[in-house]
Length: 188
Image (cartoon, rainbow, N blue to C red; front, side, top):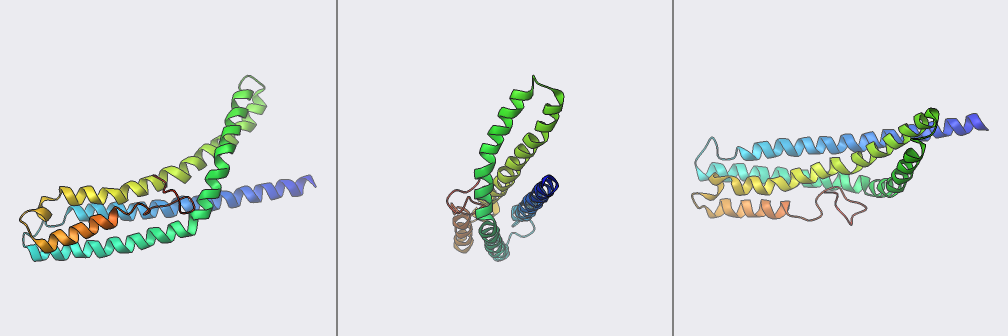
């Protein structure tokens, strides 16, 4: 019975790591896309001073941001239950792993060696589940600062450009745009 139990444990740990890695990679790819989008957004109006060209560039970026919003919602819908369950189980597991770690510090070295990987995995998992989606949320919110700091959008006054910029900022300000815990709390 022991080898079967051990095999099942290793298989479960492997699947757990594969799904966590997939979650982190998907979040990093979305973050990289939004970072690239933000860099392109900063260049609006740099090459052309004509308001029609700026309006067209801004509208193109607005439509692209809508696509990114759909992508983020798809990621959120795919992983919302996973994120909720993993964070819900990771927090107590991390606490108990840290308690075990502090208990075995003064004990035998073999026990210490056996406890450290579990604690390390819990901490890495917690960072992967929270820090990467938080960076994604920060990249989403940075669009508003980029729009407001681009003087070519705001001067000289053009109502069409103002309307598109306002629509883009309103789209960015959506409170639930990001990876959430089962839809009720965005990780940021």
